[in-house]
Image (cartoon, rainbow, N blue to C red):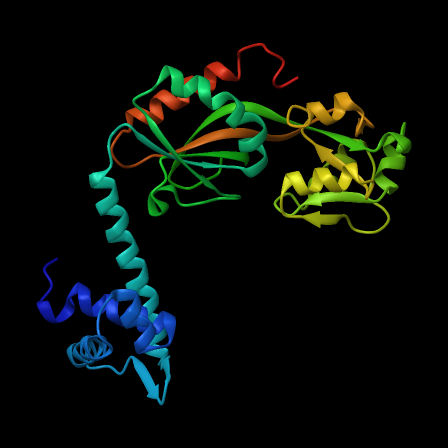
Length: 295
């Protein structure tokens, strides 16, 4: 589909408008774009004339997007971001890998092992970003992501690394407890897994009772709350082996397979990335090393 120039505003005018709409100020936008305030004002005026729509309400020092301006600013922001990611992808070396990691998995399991990957692949540069939950790999410019849960991301291929097993854990002064006592105890839960305790109780033939679980966003914070004695938590033993061995927490019941897993997620579409393939092969080797990492 061909578009006329009237339908395709120049990039500088879009950048100027987006900055003013986001910052609410011509002065702040000018500082960000390294332009004069009058230049930014002219760019926005040109855009409004081209579109035939008022995008900004100007009142004294305050600049507020009109309803049309709010919608258009969101669309422009997305388009400019997509163009930027495409440019970065074109300039990127095939030996670069942008990897999204889970905070606790990344710090406790992956980072101690990364030197082995880098020694074996000295030509590959890895960039890390921390993400929780489902993401759009292509839109975010991410080559691969380590994900805990189910392999249900649209537009992504999944490689199973290991089955997810969690264990009810608490401070040693709590135990031993029966499953029924655990179900009645103060419980700690992850925000990303709000129904995990209900599923554990159901697997024991029990129903949850007592107050709802205390919810935490990060697994590491949940584990620290468990160590502090705030309640019982479902922890993956392979990530908290040191705390279990030191007796800071103890397993109150056997580990349980929750039906989820740890996965490497990669985009289905786009150009193949040799660095991603090398990282996937290395990860699969690491999880089968037999060093007790996932015991």
